[in-house]
Amino acid sequence: MNGPPHPSCTTFLQWALPRLRLRWPGFRKVRRQPCKLIKRRIRELGLEGFGAYRQYLEEQPEEWELLDRFCRITISRFYRGQGVFNTIKDIILPELAQAATASGAPLRCWSAGCASGEEPYSLALIWHLELKARFSGLDTEIIATDIDGHLLGRADEAVYPGASLKDLPPAWIKDAFEPAGELFRLRPEFREGVRFLQQDIRREMPPGPFHLMLCRNLAAMYFEESLQREVFERIRGRMAEGGYLVLGKHGRLPGGMAGWESWQEHLRIYRAV
View 1 (spheres, rainbow, N blue to C red):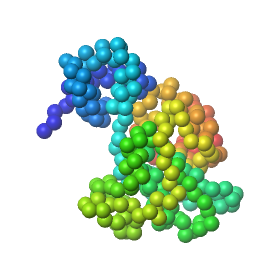
View 2: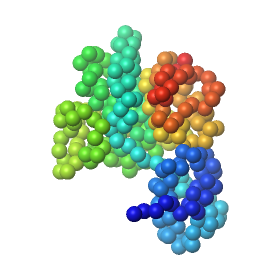
View 3: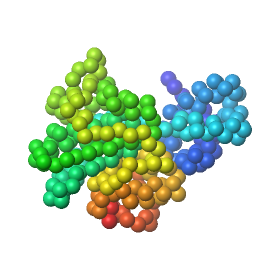
View 4: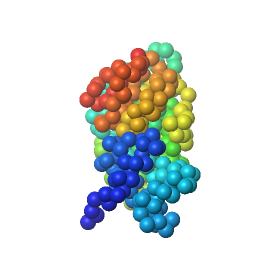
């Protein structure tokens, strides 16, 4: 059985994360992931521990970029947070699709920090299996961004273990996936309209306007408050009026931010106003 992370790893993260404009509270419960990678790096460098690695960072500033990579948290599966996705399916997307149909504009969604593609493909499944027949003339686009090119490669392959599908309705799995050995491959027709881009949301964003934006367990969870404000101000500039922003269950917009109003607080869903 694995024990808790070594205390010096926690101390190290509390020192290092603010220098990356990240916040320790967001990492407290998931610190095993970065600690494992940092310990491996310390061994690769032949250093004696976290104190020596801290000194190495101070002497080798280019190492901070690698440390930043170690602090990317990846937890993803299809339809993760069923209450949120059911609300998107039953209320948000039908409303947005109706408005887009009336205006003649395409319906555009953005999934930030999309990892291996489970989140944007969940949106695609909702659209193709539940809504497309009702809005057959409507053009849709789902933009999915992530900083990690390796994860985006996996998203493009669209092959997943069964555990990633456990929250999906069985009928959806039957209709949308085909066996790939012991894994499951998303059928090509359900990937239509999903486009993946390698971007760091701190530095680059796709052009708007977007009617629905999912930024769950990313900026509001891991970024320090000043960086959160910068990111969400820029996101607001890419949102259509009345567009929906969905955060993770532990995320909230920083207090006093203009341009947003809470829509369903318990689901951490906001609207652009």
